[in-house]
Image 1 (tube, rainbow, N blue to C red):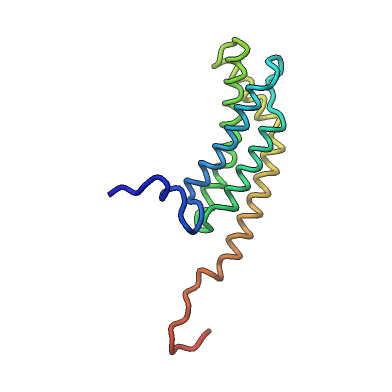
Image 2 (cartoon, helix red, strand yellow):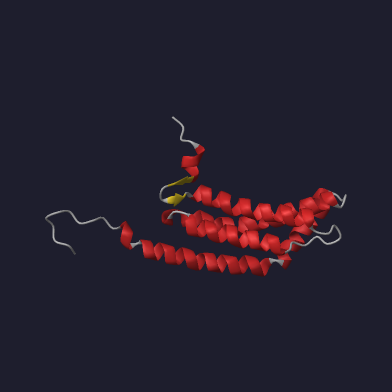
Length: 152
């Protein structure tokens, strides 16, 4: 029997690793599409909306994921950033009537380089939040003592 998609993405304990990755990449791509679609065709750089969606998506993913599944989210942060930049470059190239492969790749790599500080800052904040969440949850993972046995 197959489990429903909603059960694979979240449950009462929070988002699963897969659900949090979908959240981070989805919000990042949303910001990239809006930014690339509304920006001037003469300038192929990402703007504030992409950065905002990237930051919110990644930090929400780290905060809402289960404590035992934080690792995939930390790996997905640079992947979401790269996907957003490359996707935005492809959209911009198609709007400018250029070769999507050539111009889109160049625009995407340029955005990767110019927006790298935002990636590093978000990654450091996410690492800090993940560390705090994991350390604060260690006490709750202990088994309760059995009745009749002395507490340690």
